[in-house]
Amino acid sequence: MGKKEKLVQHPFDIKTLRKIIGMKRSYNRANNELRPITIERNYTKYAHGSVLVCFGDTKVICTAFIENKVPPWLRDSGQGWITAEYGMLPGSTSQRGDRESIRKGRSQEISRLIGRSLRAVVDLVQMGECQVTVDCDVIQADGGTRTASITGSFIAVYDAFRQSVNNGYLKKSPVIDICSAVSVGLVNDEYLMDLDYNEDAQAVVDMNIVMNSKKEIIEIQGCGEHGVFNRKQLSDLIDLAEQGIQQIIEIQKKVIDWNE
Image 1: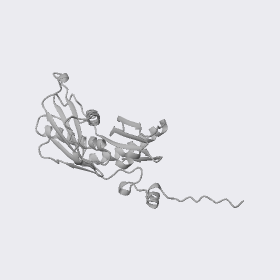
Image 2 (image 1 turned 135 degrees about the horizontal axis):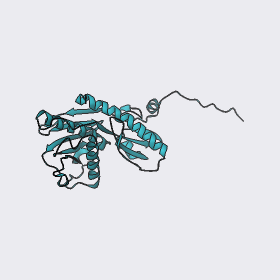
Image 3 (image 1 turned 90 degrees about the vertical axis):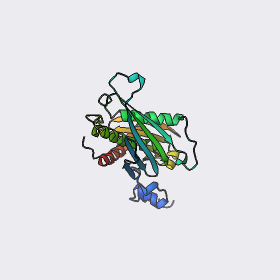
Image 4 (image 1 turned 30 degrees about the vertical axis):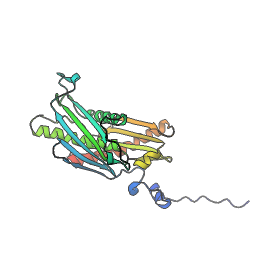
């Protein structure tokens, strides 16, 4: 028998290995890195709050309007409401999609997610009997459109309330915390943060997680797309999402000069 060959261990991290074997994430980032994120405020002229938010090549316009009305079930309750509508424009993907005259099931589900996320960080009683309607229009999609929408919508709503305070309609902004979201997943047995479209399509497990600045969970949406996952993997994915969300929240704080 010949001599056993020794296994040679190279002190390379995942990012370096990807460079060597040609497997690169977008923007040549590590597994626990976000895509470049930008938030441009006051993006449109007429909305009370408006934002262009970009997570890498995913781009979403978020606008917020405050109206002196509430849903019928909240009349004379002294409480306000925040609702959202989400949609992808026809040219947002590589193949033209149909314009949504009637919201599809996926769009309705994401709209409700955005609304729930925003209501979790706003004092609905303090805002009084008015309604904030947020519109999230995806103009370019490369994965993570719902997480980008939540992140940008928070800024749009924050700015809408600040405008109401400046105009004397509200004494104080009812925003009590910041919320943001990020996607995480298992791709080729690796834990990835902020999945782009190609990674999302290959993910065995795919999750979208929403949190506030206190690291409290607002919502978890996750499933085994092409397999199953165990409790430890779930915990590891939540821990990874927490890291990413707190980084995004720091970006949001700088954008609005948060000092609440």
